[in-house]
Length: 220
Image (cartoon, rainbow, N blue to C red; front, side):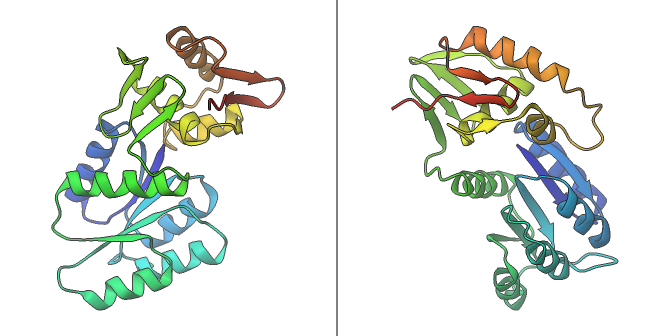
């Protein structure tokens, strides 16, 4: 999963990048509203953390423009303490949730997980597919109750496929959602990670749809 962090305060932006990266997300950071709008318009993010007080273009304008061009990714806005009218304005502009500064990083991570789950139609923090159970809070995978270790990239790929069970996901889409913009992307490595995952998962669970991509088989 790929997150856009829009925060102009360097220390907080760095803390958010580190915490989200440690939680298994690919993270892009913008420090002004103009760049944030551009990235959110052209890149396929799974969610955004958006501060409202930004240089060049304020956060409410960024959010309104995203929604105006049809960008539907969940957005968590950051607001100043007791600034209730900004919270109301943010929700009215299309935000999905808000968090008041200062905040605990654990709460921000929990709110983001919930937003991403709901966007994919999942109610539980643990994603399930047959004998697979992927805990989005800890990154822990179990197969038939047995813990299976994953690398960070394996976790990102499996997490994305489990959020989109039954859908055909192209290799290009996986590249866009597991790597940040400034990462040296190589779509050929997706095949390597898929091959490693297949060795750890029940046979036939990850299907190759020739010429289109991969699909995590829906298990009832």
